[in-house]
Image: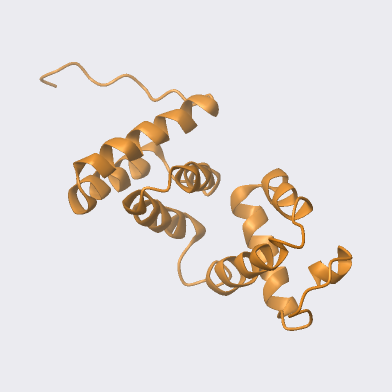
Length: 150
């Protein structure tokens, strides 16, 4: 168990499903990157360790560990939900994850356009603004738009 390995004792120690946690750890690392996951877990303390375990076991192990939807599809779904909830840090994290999962700029653009229609133009505006921040940080430059009228 992660908590026991870290020397942190919790009231629910032993209740975590180790196999589901391991699947979650692999999925979380695959989507968000080793550096992010290692930082999240290495900075866990007695206050938030159980939360990190819950996220890894259930969000990543139980849901992302399922194989019906591809990681790319799950990433696009998450972007719609997180943009609608206006969670900017999570949106940027999962936008990077979508890029890691092979989502194209066209797929990402259409996902954000769907957000604008179903969640409201302000949600779409913010999603495109946050996406631009990630693209710039990642050094991704979309090709220029075609001239008007083409």
